[in-house]
Amino acid sequence: MSTPLRVACLLLLALRSSIALAQPAAVDEAREHFQRGVGFYKDESFDAALDEFKQAYELASNYRVLFNIGQVQLERHDYAAALKAFQSYLEAGGKDISDERREQVERDLNTLNQRVAHLRVKSTVADAEVVIDGSVVAKTPMSASILINPGLVRLSVRKAGYQTNAETFTVAATENKLITADLQPLVAAGPLEVRHTDAPAPEPVSHRNYTPAWVALGVTGVLAVGTTALALRTHQLDNELGQRLATFPGDAGAIADSRSSLKHYALATDVVGGGAAVALGLTVYFALSPSTAHDASSTRVGLAAFPAGSGLQLVSHF
Image 1 (spheres, rainbow, N blue to C red):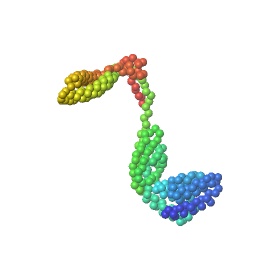
Image 2 (cartoon, one colour):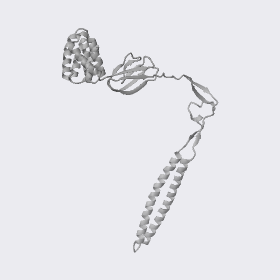
Image 3 (cartoon, one colour):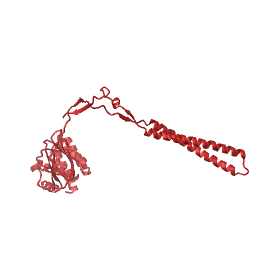
Image 4 (tube, rainbow, N blue to C red):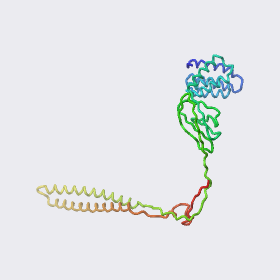
């Protein structure tokens, strides 16, 4: 059925429903929802139209609204819901539906039957909820299959006190799918019992103190930087002494001063460099030194009140 023709049918139904829904107290509100639904449908806001039509039907159960709900579900490509709505429309309308309208709806039903699948769930547990895409659609045992849309299906079967059976699968149009859900009961643990045994005392817990290693590493870094600075200055003084020695005529006093400064800086470089090497050795020593053992019974919170060797053991009774 084309969209313009559907809109025309909806407008006609809006008029007829306004006349038919003219008695109960909730009719005015239902009529408002119905008319808003027609407006949303014309604007192709199908989700909003569906909500309005559903509210109108809840307030005043006029079978004509079911036809509109079916049309909207068809536009939303929810073929299973559209098929259910049209079937309900024919059943509720009965002889009040014209032959022309009945033939049209039956043609739509024939088309929809080729666009839906059938699902049946068997479970080892009775009264379990069958949930599809977050909505409860049936309970076990299922007396008949349910209509679902083809494609990806997220199914779960659940009941309090049992592990939920969940799975995802795909179905094709016109397929008849049977799922068997084996629900296993949840096992609840009983109360915990405390027993005293003659188990040996807990083993000492090793603890390594890295503070001395970090301190030594910091000193190593400082001395390494100082060695580098002194080495650079020594290199500069060596270049200055070479330049003065190559100058003719040379200044004997300046040469002597340069040679003396070079000796002092070279000595300082050797001393600081040696200190850096020692600090590096201490860093390695502290990092690799044996760990310190502590008695676990003296550090665990809550066990200090029990003597060593009392051996607490937790036993679970089912």
